[in-house]
Amino acid sequence: MPTYDYRCLDCQQEFEIFQSIKDDPLTTCEQCGGNLKRLISKNVGIAFKGSGFYVTDSKKASSGTSSSKKSSK
Image (cartoon, rainbow, N blue to C red; front, side):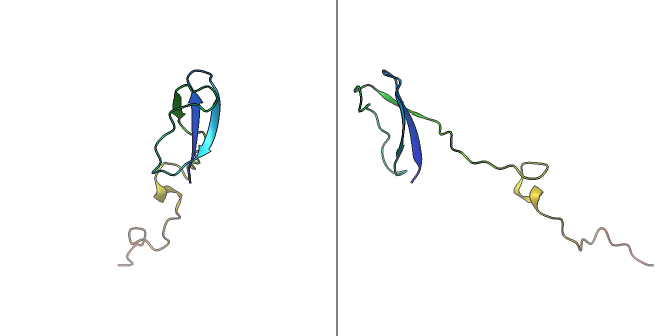
């Protein structure tokens, strides 16, 4: 289950909660009864590999390419 971060707009309390993706977002602060805002998560794991941003950039080049072979004729 994903972790969601919330902040109360009235008392500024921040907390995390595990919720199913199918669950509705929380709307009421349990501490003061104020309105809650769901925050963008800080726990995002992004890994950039290689010289660019494509998945194929981090893969090794194939050893038998036809363009690198020269004909002997």
